[in-house]
Image (cartoon, rainbow, N blue to C red):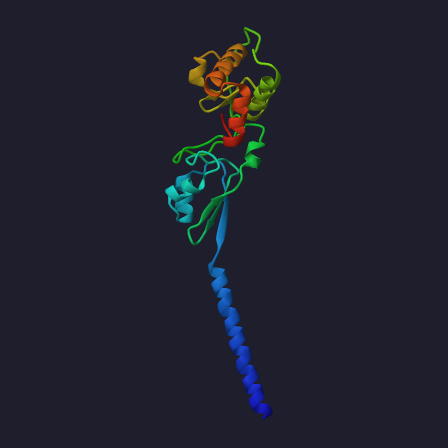
Length: 203
């Protein structure tokens, strides 16, 4: 009788152990990977690295422009094909704008990478005041750290305007004038531009 009970107990233990091992192998099969975007990453590169389509990555990237990724952005990719993208608050808090990339272009560092020749022939002046002036300073801080000489690819100066807008005149006075005109025509005010920047990470 004791021998039978012992055999029965051993069989039960073996069955339970096998079930535990089997259950462990099932849970191990469901996994996710987190990828933090670094300089040089593109959607094409992530697609090849993790075996997911560029379209699926872009579709999941709804925090900003779906075709742009940012240094510090976190993609969570599960083996069942589910993809999610983390909040951009850490990127938005950076002292300079996080440079963006199209699908095939590499991500650039957020900090300015070169100095543009700034002509100081005229003093910098702005026609905005009050909350608009505060919004303008806020954007300048995010875009360039307030540096008229900052340059990041085609974007130049304190407000990181496209070089084509400045027409070769990188003086502080021209940067102020062109920035005011650009923001007024596109957003109506610097406060409006700030609201857009806070939602999209650029303006």
